[in-house]
Image 1 (cartoon, rainbow, N blue to C red):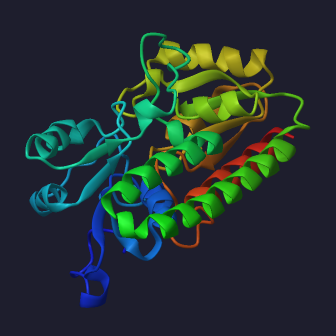
Image 2: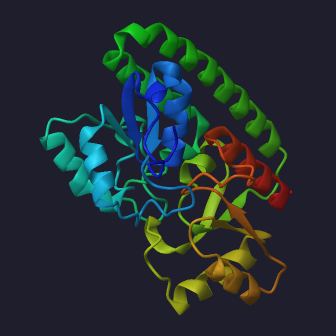
Length: 286
C-alpha cells in the first residue's frame, strides 16, 4: 500500500489501521513491522526532496483522517510542520521518531540538529522499535504479529550493520566530501570523517558562494579526496563543478540519502538503500 497516488484501496486492503508515513524510508520500516495489521501510505514520493515537498489538499485531508502519522521531525519535513501541528490539534496522532533516537548536530553548525537519523542502521533498529510500540498500542490484537515482525526486521538490520562495518573497515583514506550534509549519522557510526560539504549547514535550499567552492577545492586537495558524494534528490552539478576545479582526479558518486530509489535503482527499500550507499562509498574510497 505504498504511495498516496493510488486510485483508492480495494475492500480487502481496508482492514486494520491506516498509517501514513512522511518519507519512503519511514514507510518501508513501518510496512515491515506492521505486516498484515493495516496499510501504510507514503506522503512524500520517491525521489522528491523531503525538505521542499508541498502536499496537495487531498493529501492534507488524508493526514487528518489517518489513525497514525509517522514523521521524521527535527525540521526535515520543513513544509509540513504547520500541517502536522494542525493534525495534532485536531486530535490526530503524530509520531515523530527523530527526537527519540539521540539526534546529533550538523558538523558545521553546532547549534543545530541533523534530521537524517535514518542513515544509521542502529538508529534504524530503534526507529523500528518505536514504531512497533506505537502500532501495538493502536492494534492490541495484532501486537504479537507486530513484535514478531519487529524482531525479524531488527535482526536483518543487525546483519546489514555487520556487513557495512566489514565493507568499510579496510578503507585507508576515510575523508568524505558531500554535496549536502546528510551523511553525519552514517559517518559517525562507521568512523568516517566528513571534511567538506558543498551546500552549507544541512539545507538543500542554500547555494554555496564562489568562496565556499574555492575553500572546498583546498579541502579536496589537502585530504587527497578521490570522490565527492552527491545526493540523488539534489542536482549534482555543484559536485561536478567542484571535481572539475580540483587538481586531482575526483569522481562524483551518487548516493540515496534524502529518499529511497525508484524501481530498478537497487535502493528501493530502506535496507537496500543503506547497503547500496555503503557499497558505493567503499568502492569510491578504496
